[in-house]
Length: 345
Image (cartoon, rainbow, N blue to C red; front, side, top):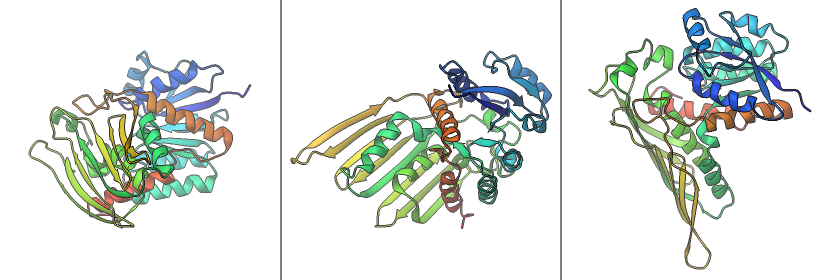
């Protein structure tokens, strides 16, 4: 029986809940694939509050000193759940200690920092994954398979729409929606999941034109509304529409139109049509529509995709391969967000 991997979790705030739930699921598997030895937070009060939660990982020791967890020779990997502006320093510290890393999206607050932490992990020979969990939803995997087998044809056009809602109280939290801490607004924090998934299907664009604004709905530094047009090699085009000013919040949606089919992926549910080769059409469905944090409660979503990303990360470590949601693969969406906002290369 393969020994379970031992983890340290860095960050015990709001974003830790789906990770703790996913880790609890994995701890109940037989054989156990992972155990949490440490939970780290620089804030003693936040750490104490997290310990009182029912989802606190069984047997985990609290610490306010990251190095204490990294000095533990039994720790194999680190989950980094801290704000984006801290990611580079924490990931590089963990990588230099020889620990594999899974980091919450985005990779970092800037593309330069994101590239730097990817490079550091490669140099240190540790695996790097990122929590872009929409990629491993069953419907997303089904659509990826449909596109890969060629029956759908070539891309003609596509769209990604994220019409979500966040009340002002969400942005009143210190640092939220700022360039320094988060690296941006709706694109970097909310729509990154849907845009990343779109780019997994389409590949990188050759041309990007975008507009972004802060609507009268919110008081915040960065954008809460953005639109863009993307053009791809071969002439296909796509539109992007993202906002957190659409009360009460609507399911995110990706549409793809091909030369021999079409597909709609909405909040975890796939509905596609493909030519059947006999002059008709074949209907395909996969997954199921479910809550994804589109409304006032940003944590109102199922943690199963988180579990899938973490499980694959652990298997990647054991098999000495790249994770399915690798850090290097997440650079594309961050680059395109920079291009939409007019700050990218």
